[in-house]
Image (cartoon, rainbow, N blue to C red; front, side):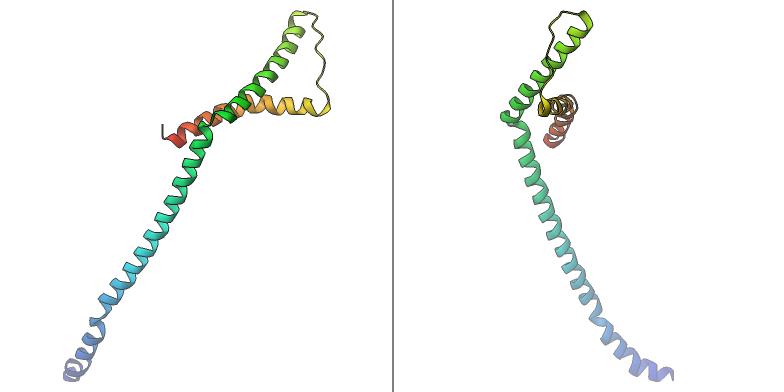
Length: 127
């Protein structure tokens, strides 16, 4: 029985398993190459997105619009607060229907979004 195993089964087993390491190595290499290509594509997409964000965040146009709209609303609400506290008698009129809601949105974005935009801008730039 042992002779049969050593003379018949063992050589067959060694011949069969001899190609296994190269097949496993080829499979693992192909999986590694696929994963590497996927990771490189994702990294390229993230880099392109971050570059576009950095260009948008450093553009002067959005900053001018944000500052202008925000400053006008701050002046408007500041004058209302000063008039109500010190009774200057300015009698500032209420904004018309759609603009009163817009003013609160602009004011909120000016004081809430501007600091967040600065933080994300620094994060995108890597500072």
